[in-house]
Length: 494
Image (cartoon, rainbow, N blue to C red; front, side, top):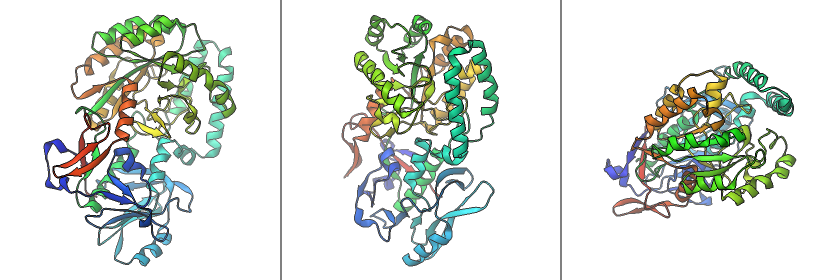
């Protein structure tokens, strides 16, 4: 997949006034702000259709196919990169009658295989450029965002056991000396490191899937696909700094970190626990007045907020009340505990409780993306850099190299590098020095949008409320992102 900037005037093809028409909403098109219109009448014979009117070719799929969810691998847009998906997949013998009824000459363009190499199904293409998917593309994307893929990847029994162990650990943790807690975490990390999916520190599968889908869309469109760029004001990636204050000692250790960032023209978000330690309101007022952000870090930070829906509903008012009192629009749960459906009960603008990939947290997994996304009305800002506690305390790292390598990767891929550090640990000279060198490396990068989490969330909402409209001069943004947004084009062959 190649991204073309509309402002550079690459190809006449980017001026093709083609707007897709779809029989139903398409999550990926909404996510990337690709222009399309809804026409339920396009659905035929139980099949969803996405049509490029200027060409007439279509993408077809069956919504929620009657098949079990499985893990499957296919080749990506370059025919070499393996793309893993977790979805219900129609087998070829169920698809072939549907294709015969449509007529034309169809052939297998991609074969999806199981872990043992056996064929599960195929992507089909005909001689007119039409493409048939054996899965619902919405289901593929949402399986990653919601972490439902873990049900397929790990199995129900394993997930139930891990959740039970996590619950038991947080119930007995107050009785364990700190040194014993760390020893247990380090021992368990050896087991967690054996996880093969999602890969750590980088998992590209969802974005590899997006790349393949854009190549398919460009093919049926007969031209590059327009979308609204991920970041405003010409920035190609985002750098976001955040801190979780876990103890009163961390609150007392804020000032050296504040001065470090301020001296480099940077600002960060500080997530504070409302019911764990005394909080001087003047401290939060000073933070906000200096251009920093205040967020809510769970209500209690005892690891039990989301152990059940009843507990979450009982404790949630504490977090919501703190958010209202502090004028905080962001939330991050303690220990990054999360539940896709329950997080929607938050009365916040955004949540930042989900890593893109992290096998070393008590709740391992990740959403497999380095871009914000919506969970209902809530904006989710994924943590995309390893936490300082993980790197330095659990894994025994001694420098910032892992942060730098991951950030450079995200910069190259146009992602969001969001880091979460703790003043409770930054008091250690090794960690503080590593964080200092990390900031020095990227603070002066003009391609980075160095933004607060609330700014990222606000932009993502403005972008989602904007559309692309074709005029004589080409595509333009209409809506609240018109002034600082940018039109880019995705192309590719497969």
